[in-house]
Image (tube, rainbow, N blue to C red; front, side, top):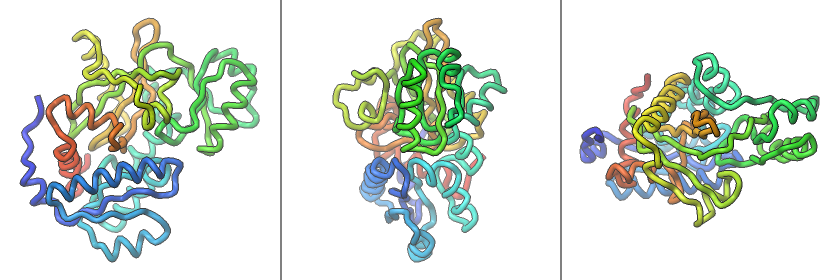
Length: 315
């Protein structure tokens, strides 16, 4: 059951909305796609909306635009790690998504794991990697693992490794995307993503990619990636998955729209991978697909995201 939503009231309350997009992270191009899709949706709905491709002129540009609200579509470092959130709070502009601390914690996959482990929430074993890493020891302890940047999204810089030499190569590749890199025990099982919209769980999605992992190409370029929505789970398993997702979201202090990524191991246990506090809003994106299952079209989804934190409402 979806909460009743008054689209006309949301438009009337919107004021002047600026859509933040672009930026300098490795996810710039995806951010531009998300931002443009959201901008056009707002315009279709009758909202007064402007766009801002964030760069070093952002302060003067925001001052000139004088928006009532910032709808944040910046992906990656600088956009979803608490930096832009802190700036917007300092100048008094309410914004979409999670606050400063939750954004920073969710962006740092190791910090997020540490909090989940303290909360007794299941997540795969991991190691932080550096030039001083004992590659043989990590390979022996973790076995087949996934090497990824600690901060970042869109599955950029991610690769599987099963030996010390593969770990080193994957580490060097991931460094091109982020300054900190980790290895996470590989889970041999299906992957799920669960959206949270205005405090409500959206239908879960089961992801099946042609490649070995649900990487950048599978997310944004491939036409062969299969999405099963709702996921093919029985009632008890679906409840367990949803409970884990909202617990992960709550443990980091998230608010607004977010997406929780989970895998299921060979013993049938769900394992947390990450929380994305600024999910993509491209034609291939997962939150719009899950919302559509509940009869929420793209334009209504954008208005719901806009309405979540209007007036600075954030827990």
